[in-house]
Image (tube, rainbow, N blue to C red; front, side):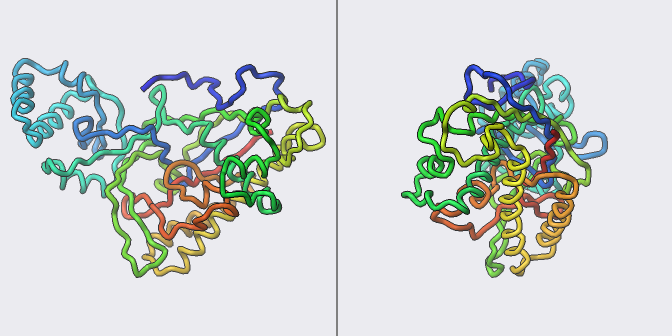
Length: 377
């Protein structure tokens, strides 16, 4: 995967940025777990599970570096298994050698859940059960939440807030045309979100990367909760181990459109020709994502699910009650955030999903993607 520098990397469509109107520092803290994929999967030939410093860890390695470090005797054994296509013995061989030679072929490590470790033990000798891990986006050996993902969540929040009081959106359910109507622009160059650039946010891999299975939960409790065949990396959140993981970035609002006469409803940018209003932006984000969480929480509480699921949602609800007093903003990011957090409610055909995809970690089930943001003026 191509490497990019994280320093001052922003998501923006502006090729030549003119005068900057305002910069805001922000902090992002995951509450549950966030998965923003890179489109890749980690095969069983690229990792093993071993005990390190008294704890189980997923050791992700470079296969080519491991093979390069093998002795002649080990190479002979390696080729014996590959020539015979003996998958079972090859996995066992690689796992043993990686544990002994990990520093020479190390890519990174992750914390596995008890559920993942158990599944690994069950499948490591089963050649028909390939336990692949969905990988998350990383850059320069750090876990990355792209500015584009944060910007997309903010845009969805703004669109939903304006759509609530706007009747012009009801046109053929074409999202592109709906957004133009709601935000009051005609071509991409006049899209007011071109004014906003958001920096990528990154976290150290160590102690922040987890690996665990996903479960499908139905609001209808008569349908059993079941584990789906998806195992994924994730950026862990506060509720998983009570340890906060916080990183910072910048929001920049540019003045490229400031002098144009745009019939624009995004008053947090163009209000009274001041070009920005960060308080309004925060209000839009909070209004939308609190509403999304409250609806989901109510459905979980009204269902007859086990106490573990309700306990997790109770914890989230308790924490986010305090966020307003702390000046924090609620957001939902990444995969498995569900349609309610990613679409315009008034124009989507499917009003809500009947299921939730939750991450199972050490006996608890966590909804994906919830985090808090704090913006500093």
